Image 1 (cartoon, rainbow, N blue to C red):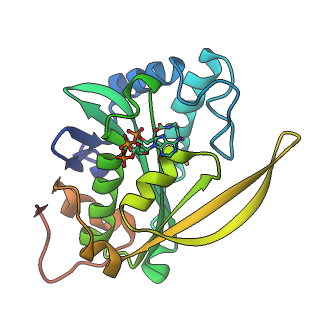
Image 2 (image 1 turned 90 degrees about the horizontal axis):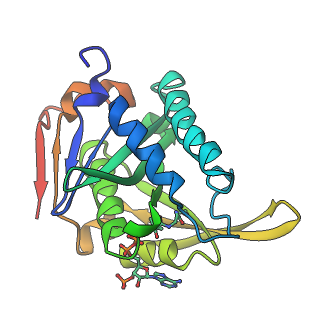
Length: 224
Ligand SMILES: CC(C)(COP(=O)(O)OP(=O)(O)OC[C@H]1O[C@@H](n2cnc3c(N)ncnc32)[C@H](O)[C@@H]1OP(=O)(O)O)[C@@H](O)C(=O)NCCC(=O)NCCS
């Protein structure tokens, strides 16, 4: 799409491709969510978008993408990427920030259809988002928030050497839930083993993130 340059952004890891979904891919993503994202009876997100009926869950996915596109601003953006494995949509990776030009801080979120979980994809997805954030956008810090009982999400952060950054108490329905935030600085990220990621099409959409042009435009960033 010529006038929405985010559609040219592609992140490629050894097993995955991450990109803004076209309409067919977005429909596939909604379908993946209908098969289940969280274990029955659990809520791993502040908005329980994946805890209703399959129809509600699918529409939540679609509306979330449309809202994020419609509400996109240089000083408040939410990049929602579909994750593809062997050409099949399997989940979603988010990278979002408010006032990034000043704060140089962004946050990630991610989910996979249940049948795709526990196969190392989440680690690659997060790794790709971290590459985009630290190498292309020039982030200083990336945060991730997970409920205390979300072992898989917290373990992915641990693998990238995040540090604890506080606990928040939330009400989910009638239940008290602890959300644990973790933070990864650019310095720590550089020292730790990284996921090889090829990033294409960033220069075309750089201005949408409110990031000034650097002297060396980055068409392709490859770190192995
Ligand atoms: C969170 C999620 C995206 C992670 O993706 P994934 O592909 O399952 O993650 P990976 O396989 O790359 O890595 C998961 C790690 O957590 C570990 N793990 C899994 N369940 C765990 C648990 N209950 N307690 C502790 N560690 C656990 C795995 O062993 C693995 O670590 P390892 O590589 O050292 O063996 C995926 O599980 C998911 O979609 N969960 C439901 C939605 C969700 O919770 N999203 C995040 C909200 S904060």
